[in-house]
Length: 451
Image (tube, rainbow, N blue to C red; front, side, top):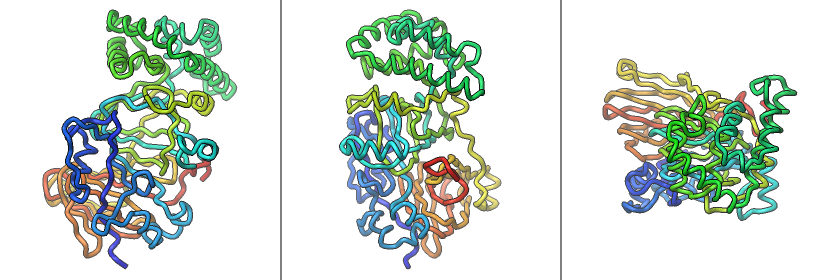
């Protein structure tokens, strides 16, 4: 058998929300593979680099031009027999680089059961039958909307943003305030269920407004944001100041004038991630990415239920019925990476404060390790795992070695690493940053939440 280290050629999408030209990390990384023959155009948007076997944009062996899917189906040992059997001889995860200049749609991804139903009913808009939990790791400063805010914050905005209250409707807004009063932060199951029903009623009422009504209310909202600045929305909530929210409304209105998303943001946590920070989104969690470059890893699916900030197909009835209506402060959405235990750093790596940290979501399809080697000669030796990996270099340069085979790695180089292969990364400069997505079956939750 050949050494299970394969350099990949990965495709890049050009959706209009992407950063333009070489400002886009996705474009720079794609152009690093000569066989892509990609000439980056300075005014063209480049949105996503895809690394995996998903048929919408499959990765290929850079040398032979065979798809990675073909290689995995020909040789199940590359993934391990167990993972090949579990996931139908397809890579269980899809790894991406996203470069975001303009807001992506307000969206959620269906759970496995709903994905199967949507795909059977509408395969054009829901192209596969898989769920799509996903993890986001910032590689440049990032901002986005993620999950429902604490209920007290939503109540604050209903009382301080007149155009929002008007769209929700006075009776439903008052019902929401009355329903959560006194137990908005309660952990009792009966209170949580009551709170979720009140939240669903208020959010559904907002989303059911027609476009002309929303556009009219948006004019009032934007005028207030421009005039009130730091006093906007009652000076903001505990996590976002009035000026920050006012600037956000004006910015998003310049991208999607009069859109329902301008009001949805008062229901959702507004989050900023610094480089290396991450968040995990379960299936059925509402979110919208607004700007920045990120690593994104997800179950291998392209299913999206959209409802704002997009010219694409929107499915508001499905969105408002599928959401879990869980609510929490943003610090509960952020992940807390830990040192990766199955790597050995050499003395140069230790003395230069090099690191390998693990982002480990509560699902079995994927985990990600970020490795920072901070001095020439710094080395990280990864123990073999019983599953496949994809590695990408996002900064600096070094080498990757598997058995007797050694390959150079520079910014944008992508490799597939087969199961049971020990891997050694070594820096050839003062910086060498890689991300490794991998699957290894163990005591983690499955698609159905079982272990």
